[in-house]
Amino acid sequence: MADFDLLLRAATVALSFSAALAVALRRHRGAAAPYAAFAIAGIGAFMIASAPGAHSALGLAAFFFNAWCLATPAVVWLLARCLFRDAGRHDAKHVLAIGALVSATMAGDYGRFALGPLAAYPGEAHLLLLAGRAAAVALLASACAMAVMHWREDLVEQRRRARAAFIVVVGAAFVALAGSEFVFGGRGAPLDVLLVGHGLLLALAFALLQVLARGGLAELLDEPAPAAAVPLAVVRSDGLDAALAQRVAGEMEKRKLWKREGLGIAELAGELGTQEYRLRRAINRHLGYRNFNDFLHDYRLKEAAARLADPGERRLPVLTIALDCGYGSIGPFNRAFKARYGITPSQFRNQADSTRESASHRAAP
Image 1 (cartoon, rainbow, N blue to C red):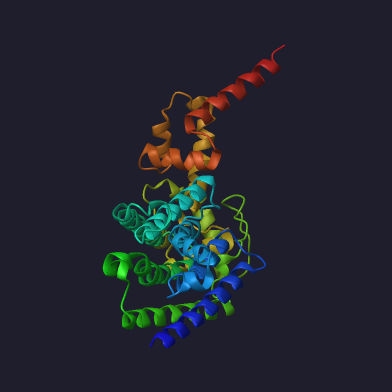
Image 2: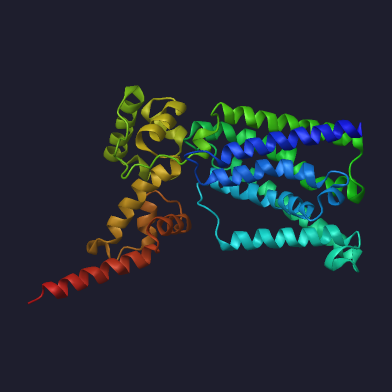
């Protein structure tokens, strides 16, 4: 059975690294591709690092693979953030946090066996290891939560389908690996359990490679097409969906449907007398938006910015403008406005006043 387990490990390493390489070498890879490649290869790194005799066979290279699989939960979290929240690439604080997690967990892992900097404190090392494992499980649970949140507002059909698959894969594979310490402790899982688990990981790696070979994740891993410059710009004009997109843009502008607080994709589809899936497809493919909230924000923030810059509405509170533009409270409005313009609504208004005053002084004789 031990030989069969070694065969499963070798096959999983080969398939997961091949799938990761296919992602990394994509011609038009987007921001999510590096995270996906790292996470997929992390399955293979786990198979290597957890193999019996890995340290004696690989020497210092075993530390590299151990660090790789310990970093994978954090990278999965970054992947979810990039895929499901359309966030950009990581910054320095993410790298530092991942480095701290890996360093602390590795120190605890080796310290319980009287190795490394915590060799003299095996009890404390074990607690540090458990804390690191708990942090990994929390990161993976947060990644799954991101996949669940805003599912209905997602306009990218492939990404909507991928959300469920992401939860299954992360929950079944990565959470099980990260949480095994709490179930089996330092002794590890028995061989019969390992064989089942490693067989499932092999099937997962094979499935990922097949999906990638057929281009099934292209829309998620490749650089997305540029979003529409303005809400009314129809970027493609073919077929019935384009006609629906034109009608959506016209109705939103004429009736100002975006002013309705809590307007969702289902409510808008009902208002326009069409199916949700057609409305999503029309807004995504023909108006260039990946998220329904972004679609609404474009209308709302454009209107809010115009009113904040209007000297005739200078005494109107910012909250009143926010509520009139469809926001339920000042918090979401401030966050959306700052994300779009880089400054708060109040700063934007003051800046507009300063610009107007400067122009007035220059025009004065």
